[in-house]
Length: 204
Image: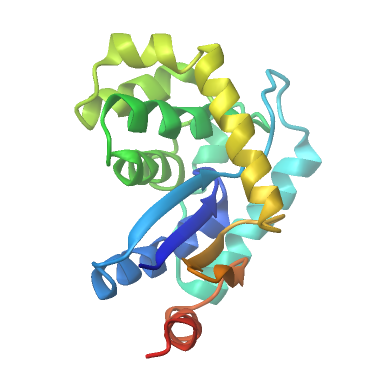
């Protein structure tokens, strides 16, 4: 039986644009299981993001809006002190899956909505803890687990796995079959092309 391997980061803007593709694939191929790997876009940092980096990311959001129709709330850049740090969000997804199996995609969606639509900063533990609570995860257990060595070790292992697959950018999608992991996309790709490539691998 084949399964999907999805390498992503909840704070990757191209992954936000790719989320409708993931939803489509989950509907189209309900028989295929999903393995999520957190790719870890940016390590932990308490340093405010330099202005040049902020402007670069704003321009990327604008580019994605134009080319994919994905909507962003640019108030984020006015309301927050951004940090180039996505590891907390990655650890949050891993911690939620540990506490509530099969909830990882729900947590990813909550983080993406908070970041890209509600102008909240998921680099902060408080924001992530509140999001975990909103999807039904015990906030006290979550806040203890997300900073644990166990979750950090799991994140490091997932990053290593993603590198072994050749996923240097996000989103990266693979179909694993008995013959190995087959790359569907390294980076963003539209629904029609992704589906065509999957069908070719599955021999349908």
